[in-house]
Image (cartoon, rainbow, N blue to C red; front, top):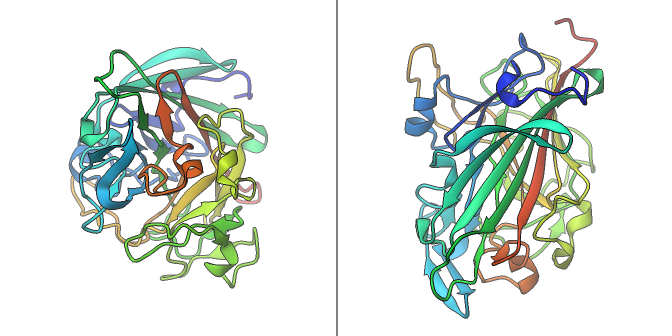
Length: 360
């Protein structure tokens, strides 16, 4: 499949997307190659057992909001949210965020000169406590690059639509995808090589909320030279941190719509055992790395063995954690503040390929 002769994702044997949360169920390097994402064999299990958020579209706001409330919105209003993390925070949109909703679609469209599929979700004002009526649009495109790379791209767009409640002129939006990767055939990521293309990170407190500092990544990973591979062991590294890209250490320069930014590589995973590679890239200024230490999915359904701790690593391109809360400077809040007439946007690109030296 040449790069400019694409098929929509539903016609690709390497990609599978389901309506709940526009969730990615499969990404593989070829029809016969193994799935590199943690997944369930049926859509029903995503509804009943997806506490780890496998491959969901996360919104209205990805990651944590401190104190489970939004302050200083719409002329100083405060909006309480659902507490679902560490007894005090709102995580991934609340009790039933966008990843738990059924999206409309797919509709086959042309996007950027390629065949794509459009999914939509309309989030009503007050859903999970968030103000403002917001429509999310997600375009998925799949194509093949040189050297047999299968590429899945998601383009996200959100805006306030329709008649809004009196006094609601703005809201907050921060979207990501929560895919966990394991390019090996093993039950954990032990032995996999991870390369991170970040230079800084957000230090966190005991509740996983950023302290406000933007610190060199060497403070978090002192034994890892920049852009050099980390080899996973049974307990190293343990990460659930927001990493900052080299161009994004000044939050005042991060736009609400990042789609005109270059697509930059965040992380590369490689399994020597399988020869499979995964690269996650986006237009976003940051990405959360979670090494899956809390995964606990039981064996349910015929032939499904479940997943345990460190079964996969999540790479979540994003804005700064807690930018939405109102407890941060304006330059943090502005990267997620969506006003009437404005458009939020981003792109994420996942590439998977097999080493040419490994036999199929």
